[in-house]
Length: 500
Length: 77
Image (cartoon, rainbow over all chains, first blue to last red; front, side, top):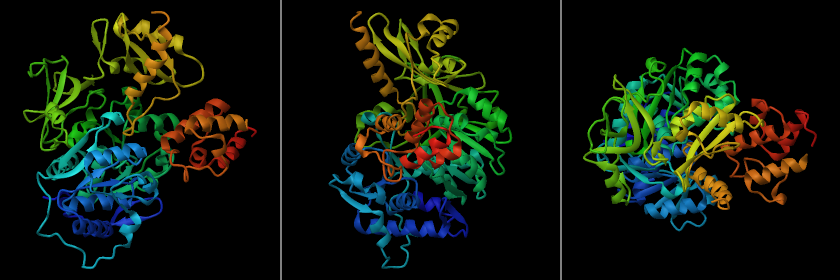
């Protein structure tokens, strides 16, 4: 079935709010008609399977454009509005997009683009010549045909374009609705961008059940501490950075929430100390730790909230319909407690990367998605991510996971955040550099060195520690390790060249 | 003190000195997004040794307003 048709299958005629912002509310029939209008416009100008890029912040325009393009049988390519002009140009030309639907305030970013740009204003001026175009019978684009292109996280130079089918997303959405027990009374407070698969999954799941979405739109995320109650939100979804900021900078955990039923956290590992703190401070809210990848339409696993403290640090088990395995170099499942690569199978696994057969073949083997994440399994089948295969640092003959060391340094008093990267080293192969964010101006460097020597075996001890104001974050709100690696190279290799 | 504030803006946003005026705001300057805003708060707190309340963090929408808010915290600009 066509994704958009499926999303609205029982919600399109609901006489209730669908999307709320601080200033405006859209009811279900309104958003459905807005999407239909765009769908009709696109279908009248472009062929099925054409790629239509969408450049917009979270807004009514984004939602209607996205759902409209998908409904028309064209493929929606979701761009990051934070990208630079040059990056946008590069993605647009690489994808072969036939046109770009752009929010008005982002048009300046497309000045140099040769492609057909259609602005929000142009869309608003369309007056339907026919009554609302109804695709009731002849849905073009459905099932295994591609519906969406999303960019993976990672630095801009190696972002990949993930091609997802209608079926991929429908399957994943069904599963998410099932384990989060979503229904039409649910309202999610959205701080994640919709071009990012975790954000898009919020849109899909809530529209399908006839729930609603509140779009947070303030310069400072701290306003959600008030908005969650003000807008009667039942759910809140964030990445590690979200919870980091909220618990360090706001009264998020001191509030009493009236309707909030659950919180989800994905997009990287959140320190267990913070998870515990959230659980203790707001014990009546269910906390779902989840794991996924853009290549899996979003979600692959979740940890049932009642097991949070018992299985802290675990990403749980596969979501309904997803098979997860941890395998060794010979493709055999690893023993309990041993490390291997996490692989996944399910209807949610992508069609492939756009125009990149080689990368697709490396990622999809024998029907399994090779996540590139290293993991362990415990006696009860719960999975623990140890690190990225690519992030592993080879030092003094050992393979060291940066996450393991980060999770120890973060427990030191005064430390707010930490990232470990490898640096070329003549003696060790790679040496460890720790970038640490601390609470005050007081230089804790020596203290941290001392603690590392106490708590870590010698080959896991950082050679350099650098206090930094904040960790660089990429567009998907993850720590950008490539920037840190480059920084380490500049700071330490140059300094040492005289000594070596 | 004004110099210190201008320096923060130059470093954080990569602006030239003459591009900074009271009307510079996140409404009219694209680079000023939510992450940068948070970095800005951090820098202001570090440099002026203050702790900014949440309501003020939200209200800090322009260079001019920031000066007023800093005054409230006893930073003379």
